[in-house]
Each structure stands twice: as structure tokens, then as C-alpha cells.
Image (cartoon, rainbow, N blue to C red; front, side):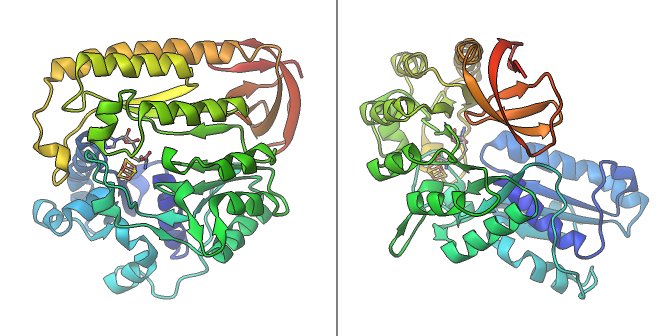
Length: 397
Ligand code: SAH
Ligand code: SF4
């Protein structure tokens, strides 16, 4: 989502004559798009901003924009600590970013048509913003606000445009992306409509919430081969008690039913897990480990619990850093072993690879694969997995 938001903001800067650079020294402007999901993410953004003090001093005409969720959370306080900051643009203001640039007086008010210049096979389309859940650890609802679903007409227009620009893979984005709905239309309908657009070869979506993995959704994905056979479904914990305290709205049992249903339909499943939620006992943690083993996730992003100001869980007694580290370490080791075996079991299987470079691409179930021959970027290659090199499938063709 941040990637898509960065692209959107960058497009408005390109329209005002800027071109992207990897080299800060030659840049006239720095746009920092921030995350505040954990304290660590926010801290990284702020320390980068701190380092830009010298950069700005070297040439005061340089412009610094601080955007995204940390910008939303910290707001005008930022300008007090970092007086050299030119513009703060919170996550809720993304739709008004162009207006904000115009009102700042820092840019030409006669921009060209925004036209993002990314070079990849993937086009991102935001279909909803915000979140209506209230997970007890999570800051997203307060920095991104309640759910706002974008109209299907706009989504389909954007996806069609991306496909026409040469992005055969469309990724639909939202905080609880599968909660998207519109009068008379569900997320499953939208998936089918996007995948039927000319030039769309593959559709992905991120991040879905387990609550909206419905029979209707399962039926849609089952009958539509263009929907990638991979889902990133954050589970957070394997303990019903912790899930309840996290206010996730599902139990271990209902979660497992849904995960099994997805696996039966050939889905590789990756996930997010939080270790060391304040009430997590060693037994709860064991439950998470056993869930991970049972489900065989193809990948898992594991996070140490980070208290976020204003969330209910921030009031609870924290685990020590040592406990957090220990649990994270154990989980990471387990996850790594399982991910390796998820790659190994692919040997002998047919795969369809969307090429992202002449010799490398991703399979429908989101594994990286390396081909023997070279193919055009953006083409779909059918082959068989012959071998595995760490986390890379090696194919026959
Ligand atoms: N909307 C998605 C998650 C978005 S946040 C969902 O509900 O599934 C991305 C991930 O950050 C979460 O899945 C969670 O694992 C992690 N996260 C969120 N808040 C956190 C916190 N306070 N401490 C540690 N990890 C957190
Ligand atoms: Fe945060 Fe929960 Fe909403 Fe995901 S569903 S963004 S974890 S509040």
C-alpha cells in the first residue's frame, strides 16, 4: 500500500517536472513516505528526516516532504522538531496531495497529466482505504480512518489503464481489501471483472482479512485461473485466547477452516504474525508455533509486539525485550525451515511464470523462479520445476 501511495505521490511530482533519482546528493526534493505500524518504522523515518538537516543546509532551496502514516500521527509537531521540513502530508490526505502541492507555493501550479514511471510488470490499484476493525494493538484505524471503498467504475478504469500501459499483473490494494463492496457488488465480483479486462493476465490482492474469506469468495477464486494461487492472509496468532484479546474477530478453529479451504483450492499462503502480545503466555506462543507448522506457510512476516499510543493494548503490561527476542527467534527459525520446504515440494510441478526480467519471474503461487532461456519481460512462461536453489525455483525451459 505504501508503495502504491508513493507511486501516486511521485506521479504528481513527475507532473511538476521532477525525475526520480537514487542519489540524494543530486536531488532537489526528498519525499519521505512513512509507516507508523510499529515504533521501529516511525523511528527509522524520523532518523532519516534528522539526517536531511545537513542536506537542506547545504542547499536551502531543496524541498523536504514528509508524508504517510507517521506524518498523520505526528502532524504539526513535526515542524517544531524539524523546522527545515517544508511540507507534511498525512495518510488521510493522499487524495488531496496535488492540491497540497499547489497550495504550498513551492511548485509550479501548471502541472502536466500525472503519469507514473515505474518499470515493472505489476500495476497497483487502491480499491479501499482505511479500516473498520479495531484490533487492540493496531494504530491503522486512527491514522487511516474508517473504510472508504472506491467506486468499481473508477477501479476498473484504473486497472484497464494499467493493463493498457503494459502491466499484465494487477494488484488490488486495501487494508482489509476483501471487505470491499458496493451496492450489488462484492469483492469476488470485482476480482472477476478486473481479471476479465483486456491485457490482464494475473490478479493479486493485499491484505485480505480472514473475516471476509466467504464461500462466495472461494467459489470465485476456484473458477478463475487468472486469480493468483497465493494469498497473504495475516493470522497474527494461533491462540484463540490471544486472538480474542487482539479483537481479531476469529478463533483458531474458524481460521484453520478457512486456511484449509484455501489450501484445498491450491493456494500458497503467507502471513503476518505478532509475537509477545502483552497477554501471550508460553502456551499461547506454542499455539502459534503449532499453527505455523500445521499450515505450512510459504512465508511469514514476524513482528515483535510494539505498543502504539492510543491503542487499547498500549495500556497492558509489556513482556521484556528478552522474551520478545527469544520468541521471535524461535518463530523465525521455524518459519525459515517451512519456507524452504515449501520451495522444495515444488520440484516436478508445472508452473506459470510471469517474467519480471529476462530470466526471472514469479509463479502464480508467488515463488521466484529462474528460467534457462531468456523471455520478454511481461510474458507468461509455462514450464516445470526441475530443482531449487535456496528460495529460487529452477525451471526446465
Ligand atoms: N490490515 C491487515 C494488517 C495491516 S498492518 C490485517 O489486519 O490483516 C500489517 C501488519 O503489521 C499486521 O498484520 C501485524 O502483523 C503488524 N502489526 C500491526 N500492529 C502491530 C503492532 N502494534 N506491533 C507489532 N506488529 C504490528
Ligand atoms: Fe489494523 Fe486490525 Fe485493521 Fe488490520 S484489521 S488494519 S490489524 S485494525
